[in-house]
Amino acid sequence: MRWEDCIEYKVKKIKPNPEQATSLFHLATRRLESIEKRGDEEFPQLLVESYYEAIKELLSALLALHGCKSYSHECLLSFLSAFYPTTLDSVQMHFLDEMRKLRSDIQYRGREIAEDYLERNLPLIEEILDILLVTVEKELRKKSR
Image 1 (cartoon, rainbow, N blue to C red):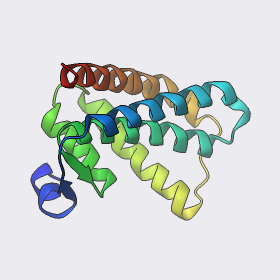
Image 2 (image 1 turned 180 degrees about the horizontal axis):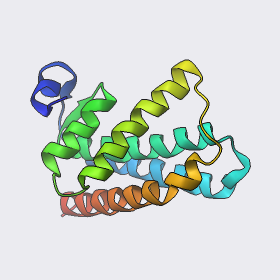
Image 3 (image 1 turned 60 degrees about the vertical axis):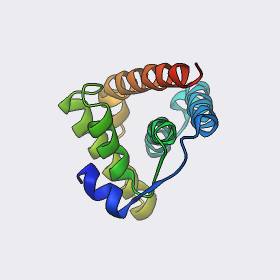
Image 4 (image 1 turned 180 degrees about the vertical axis):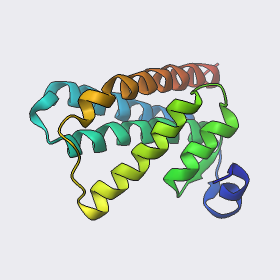
């Protein structure tokens, strides 16, 4: 979905909210710490959901800094493409979109995933998370000046 369509139908303009962005950033980092502690004890579906939620929280933090609230996970990705076009490459963006769909299938349809899904995809998930964590931290520092 194009960002322009998102603005028209699925994104609400709000006052830029650095406090909310900071809270979402901390929530994402705590979620990632929790994943590290639990490790492989969880079902792969639950870990995928947790990783996706952390990514969603980081993207929502960026939106909050820009004065936007999205009612669509797809629009979170559109926002990233529109406002931070060089942050993730096309492979990473495509993977995030596929992860969004997978998470939806897991949550709403009870979809099972291959036992080795995380083994195969964890390096890319961690790479994306590292990039987003740095991006949000940088933006939070800019807004606190």
